[in-house]
Length: 120
Ligand SMILES: Nc1ncnc2c1ncn2[C@@H]1O[C@H](COP(=O)(O)OP(=O)(O)O)[C@@H](O)[C@H]1O
Ligand SMILES: [Mg+2]
Image (tube, rainbow, N blue to C red; front, side, top):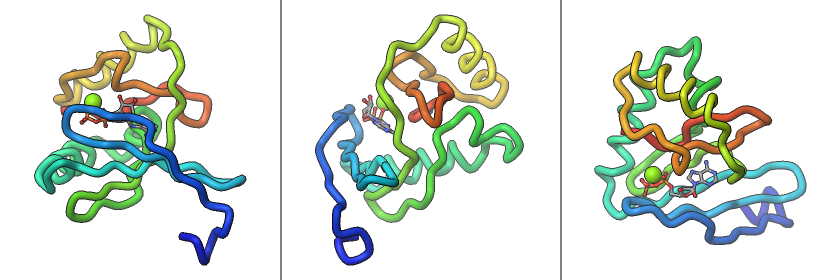
């Protein structure tokens, strides 16, 4: 990272029960690096993500670039208050595709759109 992007910075941001989340960014790009307590937490997230329909997946779920072992790189999301109708919309979409655990804590603003960043 440092060689490709010398101005890369990181900071610890989110701390969930299963993952620690670091924000990695420079002027141009922002990512969320998630570090699972165990590889199985990351694998589970990948399985969930991979089962979502390609057509609507990245519109409603923050894109996952890659995952390996305890690491996962995801599109960065901004923590802002989530409007109730957006929670409702994502809950409905999630339910249609077998997702549970859709609540404001797992929704962020990604590229100006509300998306799920974590689900089961
Ligand atoms: N893509 C993201 N961009 C920015 N922050 C994030 C992102 N995903 C998660 N976070 C932050 O990290 C916290 C924990 O991440 P999450 O994926 O929900 O882990 P856990 O499985 O432990 O609940 C979230 O509540 C949120 O504050
Ligand atoms: Mg979570």
